[in-house]
Length: 119
Image 1 (cartoon, rainbow, N blue to C red):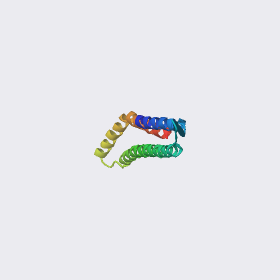
Image 2 (image 1 turned 90 degrees about the vertical axis):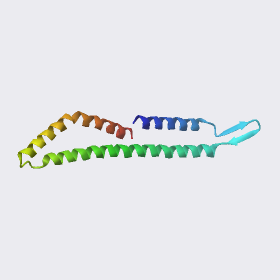
Image 3 (image 1 turned 180 degrees about the vertical axis):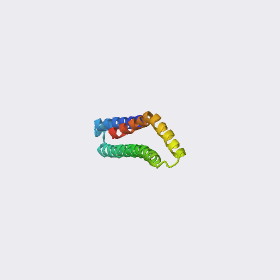
Image 4 (image 1 turned 120 degrees about the vertical axis):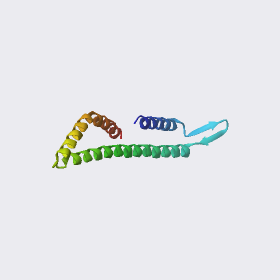
């Protein structure tokens, strides 16, 4: 997440610098027109910014889907009927494992929330 923020901030600074530069510069007796170059650089910066945000969205979606799949698999595993004592014992152990990992799951969810909030 930090890398995304840093890349967006740097790109925004570059784009701001480009916007603030004059579209025309005179050196001695030569006048140089930069407006097309400025616009091209700003367009490319906008495209790259969109690329970064799309990548962040894709990354956040993958993280969320991974977490959801893990939860679904655990729920499906624990929902299986326990016809034998061994199965009941495994379910009890698995449930204890899940309860012990609850804080880890919540800590995995916070970065995902931050990514979606940033987008």
